[in-house]
Image (tube, rainbow, N blue to C red):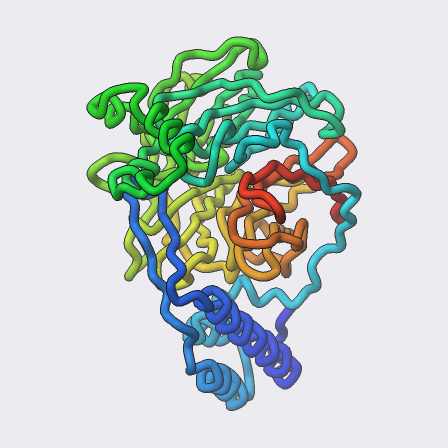
Length: 455
């Protein structure tokens, strides 16, 4: 804790921290911008866009010296001054936690997907009240962007030691992508997804398929032409299906108003809250929806404000958690220039009716999955799509006001096509995390699982 009567120690520690953060941030930007022609397709904004990155910045030394110089002239440092100094340096105050990350022990890491000839993406894991684990993903795929995606479900009765062969829950005439799942307080299962025609925009309309091998070209066109063009457009949406018998039978899909990769969350007052983004609509809306009838219907509850200077179109992939004190936190994947590819955080103290302006928490990584642990601490797990490629987690023991240094769940990835980790806590307190990853020697991403313990 920072105290006023230790100004020199504070300056030394904070100066080191800011210097380290600034260096890390600039190194990260350099790594991220190594490939001047690198392009990232943004699939979740309702249109296909490409971002072009320039070459490495050449101002690292000046920025680092500037941050340190700003601190070196300080003789006293109150908490308010600290926050102001952090803001002027472009660093979020909650990131200035000087404590070491919690210790963890990884007990096993392995591939759990069972269809080696297909690409798997964007999973969500949940633990039912009876202890069963359910895992959904976008499966049946050829690649990251293709017309073959379908929502698949796997089950484990032994805490992830073994998994059933996947069952297809949804297979629309276009691409079914990110899959989320939740068991409500009443035992109902809710599975979410969204449909996309990005494969058409990115490949077919550009004529890329004309240069492909005949078999691949014919397969794509056969999938694409399952319904006429007008029907394909009507297929675009944000969807939910519902099961009241443990996942044996499922309802037809219906509009969930918004989408986010890991779906909605339960609240202690019986409501179900879905933080997300509307897709395929003319006007972007970022906010939370609620259900008061066990997920059968949804209504908008509140819009999340846009940070000054941001474009809400560059907010993506939200996830919420309820703290032990009843307040709410939502994490947002951010693609705005400020804090680009960081996780932003917004809070609500009135059950989701109003929200604070999103702010940086100093975490580069996306998207974040939030979990309240049995002891009341919060856990965020997220993909780390730069070296070391993998998945990380952080813990908060003060209701999300600050987050620990990163915990490495996996760090042996070969590239950026990985992530979307989702974590559950078992009855013995240990944790299970599942993510997708394209591994060495294959173009087809798998589902990987880590079992670990947190101190």
